[in-house]
Image 1 (cartoon, one colour):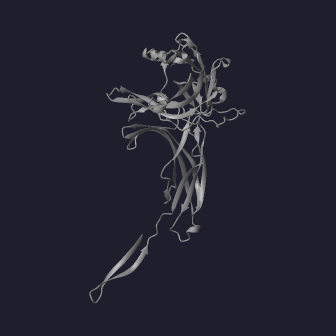
Image 2 (cartoon, helix red, strand yellow):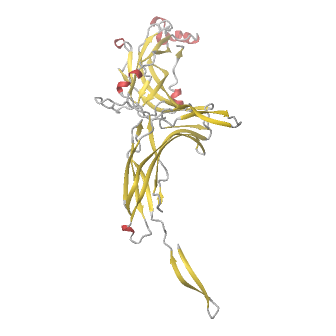
Length: 452
C-alpha cells in the first residue's frame, strides 16, 4: 500500500496544482506464502484394515516482497497435521445429509524449518485407519435432592458401542428425474500453520479421497467360511411331438391334420437341475465355481423316451442390494437400491451333453471375482448384501430351455495369503460389460418351470 501526503497550492491564475510533498511506501508485513500439496503414492489403492496410507506433503515457499527474493529464507516453527475423516452421505446433489463415521488426526511435523524461496520441501507420511468407527456412547442422567432442597444432576455412561469401519461404497438410485445416492467416503485433509508468523498458507481446495475395506483374512483362518449352500433343484419341462414313439406319431397328411384338430398337448419331458457346491462366501480375487447335474423325472414325464440334455450356456450376475434411509438418518424409513455390479459367462467342463460317466454332472467356473466392496452393515442404517444370480440355457431335442436361480452370498476382501502361497491369476476375471438389472432379472425368457 502506498500513502501519499499531498499539499494543494493555488497558482496566480487560480488553477489548483497538486504537489506531491512526500510519498511513503509502507512495507507489507507478510513474509510470503506457503503452498501445501498432498500426494498419495497409490491413490487408487484399497486399504484393508490397518494397511497404511502412504504419501507426501509438499511445502513450497514463495515471496514477492523482498528485493533479493531468490535468496530469501524463512526460518520458524511449522506444524503439519493430517485429518482422516469418514462419513456416510445420503441424499441428492442439492440436499445431502451426512453423519460422521470416524475422525483421526496425526501430526507429521512439529518443529523448526528453514525454507528457501522457490524450493520444495517434502514430508513423507504414513497414517492408518482407526481400528473401528467412533464409539456410540449412551448415557443416563440421575437426580438427587440435597437437604436444602437443591437438586443435583449426575450424568453417567451406561454403555459404549463400537462397530467396524464400513468399506468405501457408493450406490445410486433414480427417483423420478433426480438421482438419490448413498455413499461411504473417507478423505484425507492437511492443515499447516506457523504460529507467530505472518505467512499466508494456501491449502489444497479439496481433500484427497482414500479407499478402505475391511481387514483381510489369512487363508488358514477361512475353514469356517468354506460352507456351501445346501443342494437345491429346479424342475424344467419340454413339450415336443418328437417324444412320441414312432408308432404313435401321426402318419401322412390326414393323420397329421387330425392330430392338429384334436388340440392334444404333445408329450412332455421333465428333468431336474441340481445346484451343488454353490459357495456361501466369496473372496475377492478367488475363483467362483459350482457344480450342476441333471436327472430325468420319470414320474412326471410322458415322453416315450428321454432325450439327451446339453448345457448351452451359463452366466452369472453379482447383484448388490444397498439399504439406507430415504432422506435423513432415520432407521424407520429405509429403502433399498439394486445394482448389477458384475456379470460373466462361465466356462463349462466338460462340454457336450450330460453323461453317465460323470454322473450327469458339470462344473461351471466364472473366474476370479474382481473388486467390489465387502458385505457389511453399519449402525443399522446402511448395509450392503449380495446375491449370485445364475442363468442357464439347456438344449433339449432342439429346444432351448432356460433356468434362473438366485443365491445369497457374502463377499469378503482378498485373502491374506500365507508365505508359501501364490497370488491368484486374474486372467479370467468375474467381470465384463454389465447388463441392466432388468435384463438380468428377465433373462432369456423362454424358460418353462414346474413347481419344485
